[in-house]
Image (cartoon, rainbow, N blue to C red; front, top):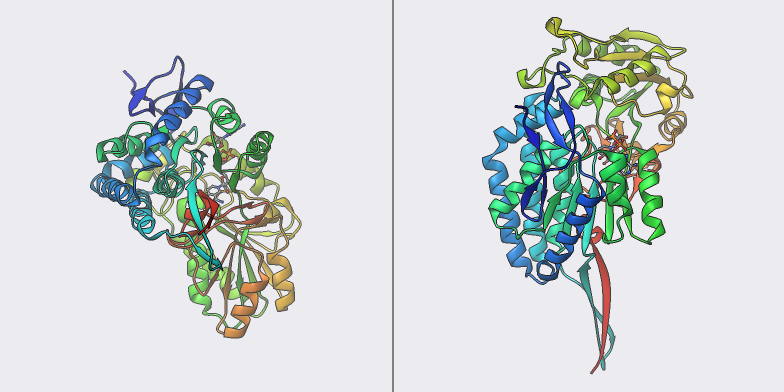
Amino acid sequence: MATVTESFVDGESVGAKETYENVDPSNGQVLGEVARGGAEDIDRAVAAARRANRTWRATTPEQRSALLCRLADLIERDVEPLARLESEDTGKPLSQARNDARVCGRYFRFYGHAIDSYYGLSLQLRPDLHAYTRREPHGVTGHIVAWNYPLQLFARGVAPAVATGNCSVVKPADETPRTAVAVAALAREAGFPPGVINVVTGLGPEAGAALSAHPGTDHLGFVGSTRIGALVAASAAERVSPVMLELGGKSAHLVFADADVEKAARVAASAILQNAGQTCSAGSRVLVHESVHAEVVERIAGHFAKVSIGRGLDDPDLGPLVSRKQQDRVRGYVDAVGTGELLAGGAIAEPDGITGGAYFAPTLIDGVDPAAPIAQEEIFGPILTTMRFATEEEAVALANGTDYALLGAVWTRDLSRAHRLAAEIEAGQVYVNTYGAGGGVELPFGGFRKSGYGREKGVEALDAYTATKTVVVQL
Ligand code: NAD
């Protein structure tokens, strides 16, 4: 009998009347069934979170810190099984899934430590007035997340939310529900009271839409596409609920003539291969000064030629995309490239004769039209486009010339140029002579324009999951 992944609500597993199939992207086979939660399940989860919040918000930071750190220990204990589930659901190479599981644990430990030293302000207004601020939890936080980094995205929202005294309801992505449910169960084992962390599995237009419209949530965090993010924000706006949107990207590497071009090419190639390019902060455009353009492009093509492709669990360099639907989408962009020279890949792949998988070869296209969809829109695949520039101004204009503004990287040995461009590039994070694709747990992360608003990660997330109350006392 096929296994069924169930929701985890109020401390227990909850089935649903209907299920849908969880498909293995490496071969198209069915991995199991998933409970197709709907409005009733979201209702139940929000009610459980609200009940739990009455006592949870009154716990001390020390108590919450201990639980978050205990959960981090359990996640570390279970890195291997969590990584295997993650690799199967997403198709990502096992070593990348292991890293994601460790980072998931690290989020809980980081916020477990951070909450112990999260202070308000004391305001010296007048000798006879005592004024201070308190950082108060919103109450119930809803989290709707994407399929590309399920473990990391779960922890990135839930860890700071519960650390600051909120209770959470998570709707994982349709394709990748299993690790969210597993971590919610680990939270119970760690000693979190029932209802503090709830997960409702299901489909976006059903469970997702029900969560974003639910009047019982006090804050929504959304990680996903710009189109759905706008829908979620509109739904939240109707009941004046705060929202944080972490959306797509079309980030650029800017490689100047004085750069370490060998390193720039190597890092740009490996960054777009990570998670098969399905990373919001993937550097999907490489803008190269005309004097080193030929060398950089040749080096990237050389890296792509050596890539091993296969099933995530076999830990190749490149696994399948998350689904055949995503494979079709990627192929659509490559087929419609217009101008540009195809230097590597360009087609679906069938490693070791596996049929039914969602593989796509690492693809390098040089000289694309900067206005073409392939250079403007987020593709979410192992597709790199390269363009050349002559001047710094031209490079910045190209980098800033899409609707997105998530990340950027400057490759140069000129310190002044590095800092000048760090300011001029419109992005939530800028890297110089390195590329972090979202960076670590500690680094504030988020976008401008169509890449969204609000910041997660780092200590800034503590502010995001709380609201300031000012208290003034006449002495
Ligand atoms: P998506 O927008 O299709 O789905 C995201 C989530 O929204 C899923 O859980 C889905 O079930 C849910 N959803 C779908 N329809 C909904 C609706 N009508 N109402 C409420 N919820 C709904 O995105 P995706 O394809 O799963 O993920 C890929 C996108 O996520 C890319 O654009 C990527 O850039 C973005 N992303 C951004 C970040 C970031 O931090 N900026 C991180 C990871 C992924």
